[in-house]
Image (cartoon, rainbow, N blue to C red; front, side):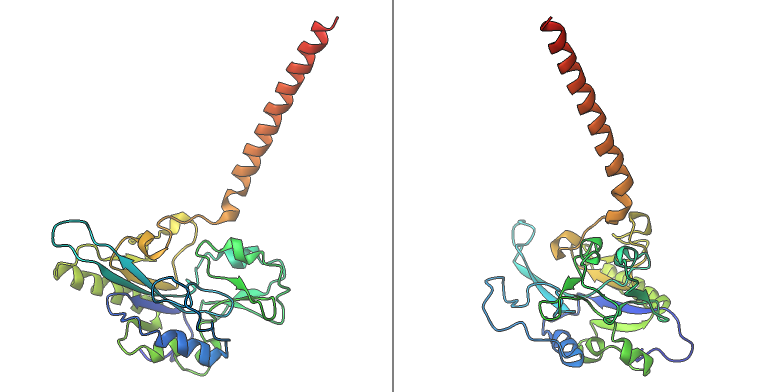
Length: 271
């Protein structure tokens, strides 16, 4: 699948972590195409990863996860690689939280931030349950993966998928990617890779009912999501506002009643 050809429809990424070799070619391609600043060459002390996380200047991040193994006799340490990116959720918390309309859904069903509309308020940052969006230290506006919107409109695939040497990152129509992901999972299970699982599908670890909707970025993981710093269960922060407000109001009522009882008893005792 090379690019979005023919009629415009939902597209996305399928990232197969079993094929990722941690080369970071996708990171470099993303920065090069989008003209993003480098993250420097300082040793972070965080494994072999100098970028550490997604940020306003890093829209693709290859995480190096050192797994100590199961602890069983003969089990060895191994590496888990994950090229993380914006999930382009169908129920995007960032889009709902944006007060200026800067965050929109494109004709490709991807989530896009219009820089000429963004005022840098940062409301979208805590609204993302995946920690994807960040304010850039350069222009102080919100930034994240654009899904290479300029390339999509030109009939090209995103730079990261184009650069991946092992096809760990696959780009294409969402329905085709879901079928590909399920087929790949079945293949790995047949080969005895029992921990393999899908993340971002309705039959995976992240379900629609948890708040974020179907993900535009699907992942095949070789361990539980927490090992990759991915939430197993997601609920959008704004979905908890009513419950939190009611609990706060109830606590206020109880405190008021308690204070009234205390002051009432003190008044009676002082007579």
